[in-house]
Figure 1 (cartoon, rainbow, N blue to C red):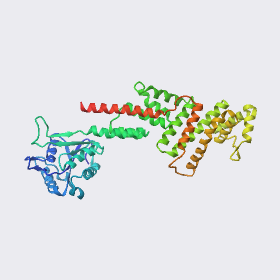
Figure 2: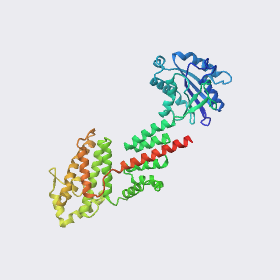
Figure 3: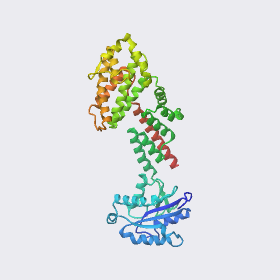
Length: 437
């Protein structure tokens, strides 16, 4: 087995009618010329894969023999001649078939590659579509550690031109990758965008930090979101640090309710309807907790150990009138479960005891029906592929927020996406300038 330190070249090429020797130019064909060039550059040639059609089978055999003779003297066992699909032999100008054959040739050698090995792709042998196949695959990201080579016709070379040179398709490849990442960002798929950027090498630290911020913030992991952009607070928009600082402090529950609303919006846009109902339930529970806490002037219990103290307080509140109301309250014909962790019916009943909550309880009641659907989905292992009244539910959430929280309700993730794409475009331009200089 080859050492990873000894990086090697694996040559892939279609066989053309000028291989291994051209009667037209009275010179070696492109395959032999490329091998000679790589050897002169002190490359270790570990494998040569020659893809041939029915018309070039003998030329593939001749090329293999030529490469084993002096002065090249490649190991015959390292050279493989592989017949392409019969369809390509009968239709050698079909681009799709040529790309499929080139991909098949790649797949044959990828398991043999060691870290640091290069795929050397010869784009100068075969029909025009066969020559193009290698650049298409490289641009599409199928050969991350590869070089596409062109071999000039010696009869057409100009002064100062090299016979063998690389073709750079990085710009086209970057366009493909940028389009993918942009789509992922607009779909709020920040984890996928990070993985794509890391594989392509397009992004920079600031872009990746902002993507990580977005991913963690969407997951309500405010501490990690804060840490992600902490080193870049002088270069990134101050808005993101200010917002995440408020969210992680949890001093104003209304900030968290806005965030739950934004999350629900995103789940709905991505047609993740089961998750949408979960976010809606979190929102409704958060609203009830906030309103009841504000009404009673105390925090609700954070765990079961605090429940006794909470209900003792409720028994004393308003000279006991609230607790008397709760004892006579019926939810779906049944008395409330008091003395335990306050649930949705008991919190709703507390608010119904005071007429000043009557207006806000109307949209909250409509959200409760959706919460029941969420429970049915979870407990009965049911799927959900559509919610016909989702727009109405989002409107009810928005109506609730407007009553308890001032300020705009535009989703900040949309502005965040715009800034990420702007930074990403700037980073890609920087990569192009660096590589072209």
